[in-house]
Image (cartoon, rainbow, N blue to C red; front, top):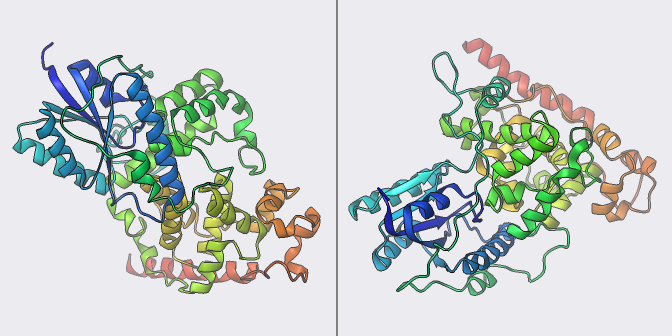
Length: 464
């Protein structure tokens, strides 16, 4: 075959599966044999991210077994990705390296270093699009060709593109290393995991777990109507699997499209993910500052006590506390509650959205830099297509509307379990010794927030 290689290397990153893995499938088609590598990168694998580390470990165990069934071996190394890849290339006489393209600033820097090092060895780095339905740059404005900064026109344009059907993985071309000795997964991860057991509701990693959730997507016929109720199990729970790539985004898209049509809310959510990626790719400054630059002038509340109470779920607002405690216990939080808790931090406590962004980064299993940033800037009204600055979630209304019987609240704030829903909804006016008083008064906090935003908007008008 023209352009074929005797032995290639495929490097797993955020694509921990064999099925519908774009770059792996290309490597297998263009190579006689393919060796599989995963690099434990300390830059990404922060020790405080315990829930994500456990999910990654479970996913890698599952992947290594799947590779072994195909006659191969997953080589696991630890260190700088560039060094690990080039060492394997030299020792295993690799002729080409295949990866799926990633788009974060760190990923681009990392892959640039790998490509440069391989070029010195006359070895090609072949990158494939795989992570998204539409890669950054595929959906651009018709006039001028610039990036969209408003979701709706991006969404309408993106839906016109054809999403490739999922592809099976070619069989029996995976191989084992001849000289390189990989590390033992169990040994590598045991020292990183501080606790042996996870919370029973913590999402489990691996392709087998992803398959179970994919099979349950057919139950989401009422997703658009019921997805905002956190006590109900009516969301896909696939976000962590999509993040780590134990399933492909194309699998989810085509299954939902076939079952419910392309207007289904979950498909729209997948395009929101693409949109946030595109914004972060073309405007990487959003990782450090507000997209709407006038909001960089906001003077935020620096109270460490308020932030700590938010982090621990001790704000005195039951729906907020339930969400924050769910996050700490499981590494997951229902999407509606994510919006409520994020809005509360920024627009009730007046704390810089970047502090919340970092806290979610530390604790969410499904943390994704572009998506996390996009959602926080949306809530904080600092993003390119964000909610209006004067729109502020009222936690009391939110919990009455989406957890009227307080089942979600009682699950995660057990000290309130003996109270009736009516009392929980009025807890701020009650005197109880077992639950904290509200950290801030809702009306006063909203007034202060509106003033905080109004001041910087007025300053912008003066300078325009």
